[in-house]
Length: 251
Image (cartoon, rainbow, N blue to C red; front, side):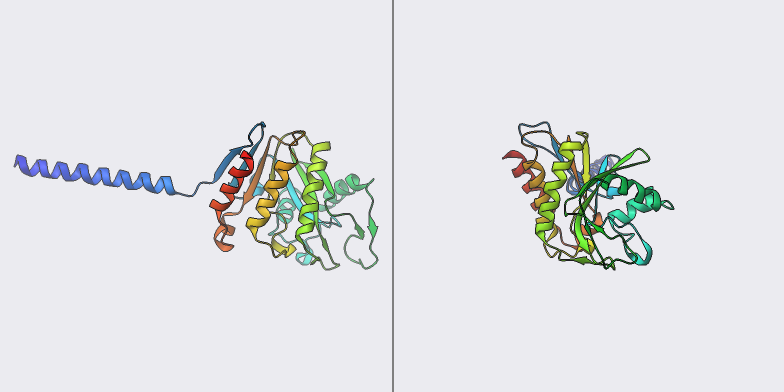
């Protein structure tokens, strides 16, 4: 009888140990939702977050078009875009207020008058034009990263637009920003129609931020958001991005 109980106790201990070990392995390999990196020699962090940027509590960079159009009728601005979600959450039923805030910020900035616009805005600003919009204790930086036609479709998308937009964005925040954490989505994707991979654009965002934080601190941390569903949908190699951030932060 004693031998019977000894055998069963041993089997129970073995089974429990095996289960605990499997749980530890699963947890250890479970995809993380946040990765944090420190830029060597500077009190600045880069965070890679898997999730919804609209839920972010810090300042958010909102990619928009060079006419700063906001109309959502007929999917002119998609509800699925970052801009569409921000408008729906913070300006729902009051887009006219957003337009007034945008117009006020653009008042002294040069523009080109478009003659083909009947149902959308006719003032086109340069790629990279950035304005600060505050609403409900939230700060947004609207960044013009693409030209659109009168129907809201992006025209002439290119990586050069991303380069110019990011450069001018950091210049603006460096001059007018608040040295705070700033969240950014993978700009240039979605309806912009750029052909470059998300990995390439992510690397571009990371490099431009680090390069523009050499002489002065423009933000305490950059929080880069990747939507959970996009990782599988676009086969994003997280390990490649993580290694790139580590290398860029170190050198």
